[in-house]
Length: 371
Image (spheres, rainbow, N blue to C red):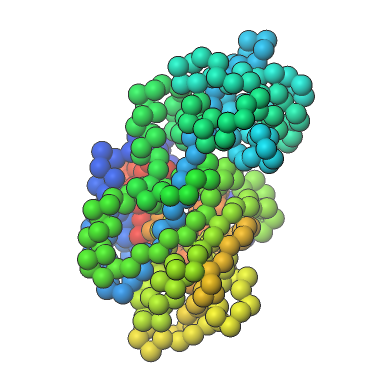
């Protein structure tokens, strides 16, 4: 498939720069993937489109305050993004202007008051702006980032080191159910949920299951290959524990739909189904389900690891029956995933409708429900 088929024009003013005043007041575009029709609603009315016995699967990763500022010993200013710790005190980071940093250079990382907090020594410069740093402190990653870190907003949301804006982003660029630290980007479909909405859905006999997939910077990487199949997708860590696998399987067996909140939850669920060869992950048929295709169960003891599953048009879904998602960038792996789920023509038509109705796009934007 040609990557250009994932192209669309978005007026820049529709790229949301701020979150909605109330999370669940975001608009919701509902797309029926079989009929191709759409309807306009609000996220706080999500329950109108769900049925008792359905199961919502949420990603409980917690976003690290991974963006930081500093200076070189020569006085040059730095902006970086923490990616991972590859050894005790060894950070892998993305640095703007990394070509100016040489092995052995001393970097001074600043706290939120713009004062020097700690030093780091550049060990190695890698491809695509990546560097390895040796931190000259015994403090943990989370302790350091708590002092120096800002929310790792995507580049299309314009921010500097303003503390007032950061106070808002620190709360809103995080789901209300975030639990396990490790992401450097938010699972944005989950940003629309409030605790009260979750409780309301539970009272309507909607079950909830939680998976963990630590979202990486590769989620924002555009597809540059001419053909979609030639793109090498990013790798992300995930886990699904026994209790939540049991919740998902129980919903399947009783005829409920598995509704993934976001492309990250979708990727984790489909990775397990694709990779599993155990009997517990084999297809089963539920007498209550109205669709004719086999429905898969997860391994009863859960699963985890790393995924490089590239879901694109032509992929056959095994677990996910419906999806909550935001609006995605052109020529992105995320757009390819939703196009695989709903059909490319349906998705592009829905996006044209959303643009015409002035929906807000991307991380802080409005949501879609694909059923």
